[in-house]
Length: 340
Image (cartoon, rainbow, N blue to C red; front, side, top):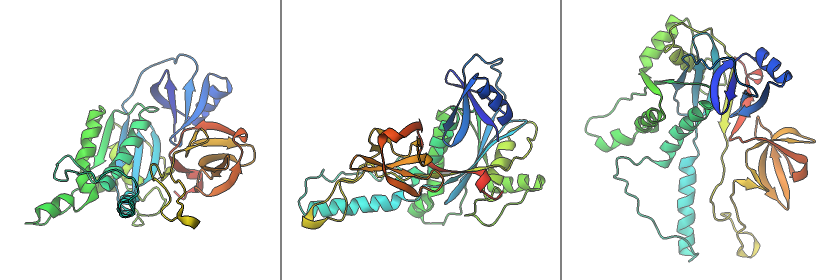
């Protein structure tokens, strides 16, 4: 796994962990964490601004997805990303809560008409899946000079005479065109590969793909994303199976109040993305619990959670004992904890 290098806000070619340690020790660079990826920020002008071709491979999936960044000489980064799957249930819960508020004559906004016949409109759950991948790719371009995006194009069998069903039967099929358009808007050279093309390239490299789609192994999803990314390079980079597992955090942003009332029919406020000045999910350092993430707040105390699992560590952390490190939207598990 390579280390991202940034100077004056521009991504340079990544470096090795050994060289990054030397630069940090000599104070020529400052370390930071970006989306779970360890990077360095140069404190002096680099010796060269030369940028080599760097490609990113994307293997979409319904539950887990593979993302890999490679150059001609190195496998830079492997990421297994959990898909966003909770939006559909959240939209349904929001609809039911609004119906209940109207029945008990609670002040609320009027029912808004949505033009569902608009061809540009995407269901919230579908857009959330593709938006999650797009946001991660865009953020990775801030620390890696990515220019080519190779995506496995999803093609599913349709049914004759079922026009409406053909259009909306698969969340992966519906959102892919929107996803490709957004990538081209961001300036990527988008290359599409069919599923059988990926299988052929994988067999040519003597690689095996696991049937355990929900496992945290490199050969479950990242094997395909690596093959896709490497197909855009002139020479085949060496395989590095080290991997980062990212699980997007679920935030309750604009819920008016708790669904269930307390005694006396009082409903307490619920939902926020801020905790005593910190953005929820941010990586912080605590005097007792070490590196952890920000959760909720109550009675001027902050809840802290594990970076890897999201498990709550405490509900009574004082703000003065917490030091901000980095913004973050993911639970992060590094490859040292995974079976590759």
